[in-house]
Amino acid sequence: MLMLLNNEIIIDKDGSLALYPTFLDVAEANFYKQHFLEHIHWQQYDIRIFGRSIPQPRLSAWYGDEGAAYAYSGISLAPLPFTPELLQLKQRIEAQTQQRFNSVLLNLYRHQNDSMGWHSDDEKELGTNPFIASISLGLNRTFLVKHKQQKSLKGKLDLCHGSLLCMGGSFQAFWQHAVPKIKVPCGPRINLTFRQIIKR
Image (cartoon, rainbow, N blue to C red; front, side, top):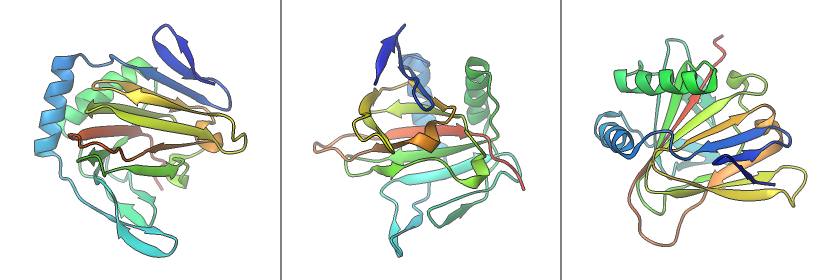
């Protein structure tokens, strides 16, 4: 299900998933990680799961163009303006992918107990077959994928410091993904997922 081709890990069934492990070099990735740790307006939002409100097991922030509002799991987010550093990354990813983005969701996994549960990025604001580009900074974490209908189709990727992961086509319709907790103590990881919000 996961194939290695020219240093890119690809899913090409029911959508596409591609990993570029060295999109940023080490010096660039180190700079962005430290800058975002210190300067992003991090928040711990409460989400609703099975009718209960609980704190997210990570910190988050939402940046983007004016009007690029986003809602998920009972959270409604109005964007903060793009910073120069976020714009630099956005423009670089747009050049790589030939896609356009007007927003970015940042997640800070502070330690081994922070995580992301199984989900698809299929909110109505993202439209049909959204293209999502995700940068990882900091400690490596495992990215799990599983097909929604064919349970035997599943796999995992190692998201390393400076890597770029792209999800496109009908991936969100057919697949779920997650970032699980790990058992050993670890340092922080920042994940930036660039998106195109349909403004209303």
